[in-house]
Length: 266
Image (cartoon, rainbow, N blue to C red):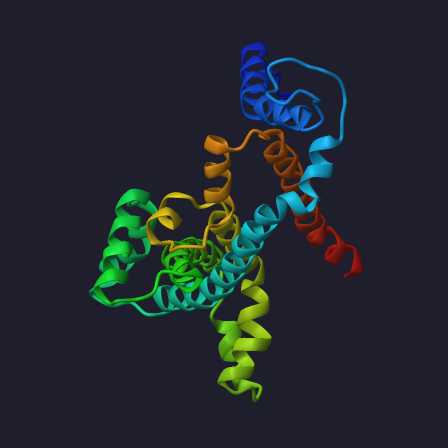
C-alpha cells in the first residue's frame, strides 16, 4: 500500500519564493541586455545595440579578457582533474596514520577564505621572485580547483569495487592498462563533474586572481569590475553575461543528456 504525498502549500510557496529569489535577478539582467536605455533604470524599448557594440572593435579588450579567462580555466581544470584524481585515489586506496591530516590538506583550500588564499599566494610568488602573469594565475587556480575535483572523485570511489582491478590484472592487463581501461572509465563521471566545477570556479574567480595578477593579465571578472567603475556602456556587460549564461545552460543541458544517450545506446 502506497501513501500519496500531499504537497503542503507552505512548501510550494517557499519553493516558488526561492526560485524567484535566485532567477529573477538573472531575468532582469537578460532583459536589460535588450534595453535601449544606457542605465537600465527605465525601459526604452527593445534594441540590439549593446550586442553590436560587444561584437565591434570597440570591445576588443573584453574579448581578450574572456580569452585569458578561458585559457586559465582550461589549463587549471585539466591539471586539477589529473592531480585531483590521483589525490583522491591515493586517499581512498592507502590508509596511513596521517590520513586525517591528508584530508585536512584537501579541505583547506575550500574552507579557507579567498582573501587569505590570495594574500598567501601573492606573498609566495613575491618570495620566489615569480613573474605574476597568466601562469601564476593558473597555478593559483589549480591550488583550489584540485580540492573540488578530489572531493568529486572521492564520492565516486565510495562505491568503487577494487576487485574489478584485481580481476583485470588476473586477465593479463598490466598496471597502466588497468588504469586506462578499468579505473578511468568507471571514475569518468566524477572526474568530468569535478572538471566542470573546476572550470566554473576558475573562470568566475575574482579575489584570488586580483592578488596574483600582473600588469596586462586581467581576466574577465577583473575586466568587468573595472568597467563598472569607468565605462558608460554598462549594458554591454549585460549582453556578454547573457551570452555566457546561454552557453552555460547549453553545457548543462548537454551533460544531463549524455547519460541518457549512453543508456539508449546500450
